[in-house]
Image (cartoon, rainbow, N blue to C red; front, side):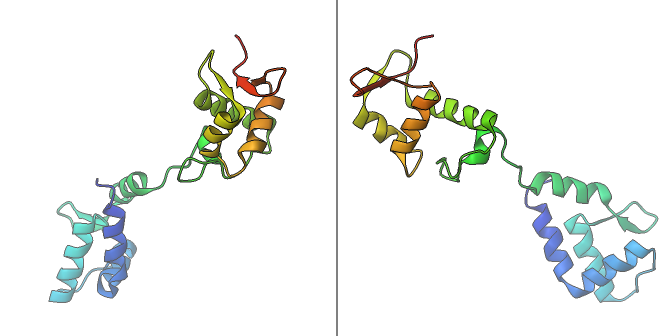
Length: 160
């Protein structure tokens, strides 16, 4: 079933005659014999809301479930829960474990092993992930995921 089939289903149900026919089919009531009823049934069949196995139209639970599975939005998992559509941090997790996971993700994407960056360069990279790169830099240092040199002017990932 295509990802947009749920749209076809909703469009069919937006039609009064198709909606009435769907209700009659759902309740096990007979449909009328007129042209309107035939068009309504054709609309429902094309949308996948009903099927006709020869013994009359019936609600297509499998078609509806397939459309829901294909067209439903998946919930973000992991670090993605804390990022906006542009991949920038939109909030910090309240859970320490989630916060640690997010900061590790940032550190892995910002610095390569054995790479040493000046404060300005690190801040520039972090600016692509947040509106407050200085605060994010401090969070990374406080979490021990990024080390600052004694002079405080350079940053690197801790040695393994």
